[in-house]
Amino acid sequence: MLNSPVTCEVRYRIDQSRITEFNAYAQIWIELIERHGGTHHGYFIPREKPVGVGTSFPGVGMEGGSEIAVALFTFPDETTYLRYRNNVAEDPDGIEANARFGNNPPFSSYERVFLQPLPRKD
Image: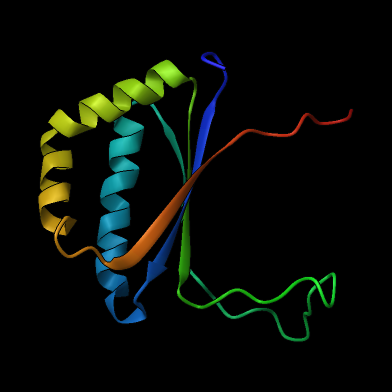
């Protein structure tokens, strides 16, 4: 898997009263990931669902909470991802971001999952 892409989804539990701070946090990390070889697919925050839309599988599906935000980014391979992890720790903007948000992040928790695409049937 060393040569396969590394895609990561991060789910944050955000405080809507700190959305401006979360946006500042997001902008910094988008720049850092792209500076160090990744593609950032964006941060996504909750919005109201379209009128009249229900879940596709009633009894199984449910609406998610309004406190969840998601980030999604990809690196071309594990080597590039690991290099990013090392380099961002030495990057002045990475150091500043960690100092700014480390003790008081604009989210109460997060979870991270590494993903791989399912093969497409053509």
